[in-house]
Image (tube, rainbow, N blue to C red; front, side, top):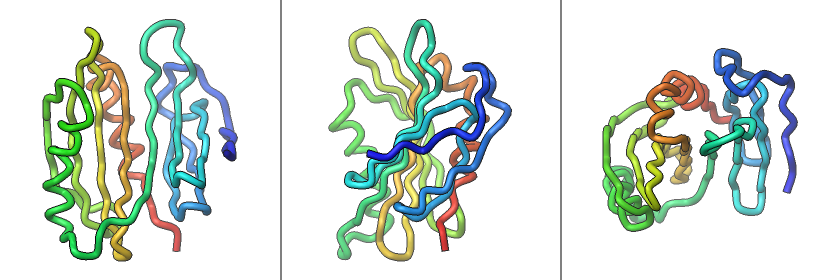
Length: 166
């Protein structure tokens, strides 16, 4: 497991400055807030990025995972299957928003939802991007539900910064 160092540090509440990280092993770049820590797991094809650990509560974080989708599964079917997959794997899911998007020229779908377990409600923003090689790029941002709305600009900045490496 490799670790990608942050190029600068910032207080935990500083979300207005970002740095671009290149993940050549997985083939993309993405922005992360300054002071957040990125860890790359090449074997599982996932980048995990976490905010500095707060003194209390849930630590906001996001990850980028990439995987192949079956050749016989059309993009729309993959997208339409995401909500049932989320509902099957997360407790007490409430879908808040679904949007069809284009990210770096590729078809994408954004889903915002909450999941509640043990009296804790987590807000989740998920972006699925399908590339021309029939791979799914899944970007997922997690925060306490009450914090997610406040961080919506941060999530939008991170997700819209995603770029495939040439």
